Length: 468
Image (tube, rainbow, N blue to C red; front, side, top):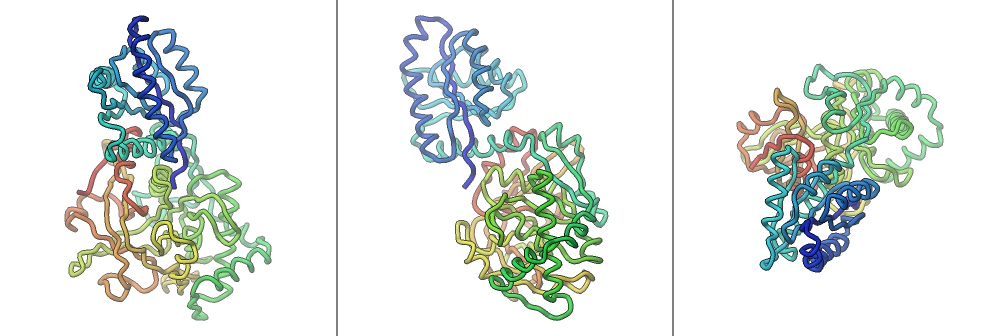
């Protein structure tokens, strides 16, 4: 469930006092209906409600709205209201804004929204417009998509993403410009060397490590081979995970881009446990912050995953587009490790159900350090896929709705027997996808959240590119 977003609701009225007094009951009734519905949805807390009809009220409204610390603004406009007051407030706040014209045949609600919206467009302020009956399920869906996606843009500001290790394997698409992040998203890109994982892992208390190893062996299938995967190497992975978790907590990171390849996977131990459990809201030590974690130092991947998590309330994964099984018409998505274990079960299922489908298996031989890969197949169901990338025009986000098919590994061409896999059906031909996707990594959340990501793009200046 996505966290409740603080929302402010305002309405504009006529600047003439006598007209304003006559309109107040109509405005207040529509505003109350909207506020009550937002609160009842369980996804919004209405932090402030105001009706503004004069320049003086607009000025005081700016101060009151700033104190309310709202993450999104809804202008409920059942009548014609003076648009210059609305434009001044919206420009001052700088919040994602939805102009809502409720169904009101007796008053010019649509006129009110169009005059305000036209002014915002001419001034250059991004906004969203919506007209319809509040009881219409489609209108409700669009309102919640705005609350989630627009609110996520504000929630993203001030976040800090950590990157451990430099660019991995020469990948341009995983690198990021920290100044560009601050300018466009208000997000800080921090850095810490992977040697800090090694240092802290060596000093990790034995009891803490033993608890983790014991829990993993009791709750997951473990295919020890006395070569790549031994209890000693699993213990090393647990040490690395715990060290990384401590670093993330101490440095206040909200997401992590972990390099792993090849200093860690070649000369220490593969870091697959870290994205499998750091991205989750709980591990064997109890409840904790869910920290979206990408591998291969994929900073734009970590940013995509954090944005998706804030907009949907769901855990996000990183996977490679690896193959297309033409017979089954599914894309084979796999990656050596950056898949949270909750994807092994349907959305909303208990952790025990997911863990029962997860196997720790020996690392591929090309990773000399050894350790476990976290093997499972993503559970069947709706999926939303996305990826932030850059071109000469700036940031773009590829967005798609897909269906995961929980097929057995051995039945899908192009699948391996050692990694997490998602078998995804998309409404796009392979050649078109190859020409559209600008990275090897794609990110997934369970459920349909295409509209939420559209809203996020709208208010963060990102071009949305849809796979139909």
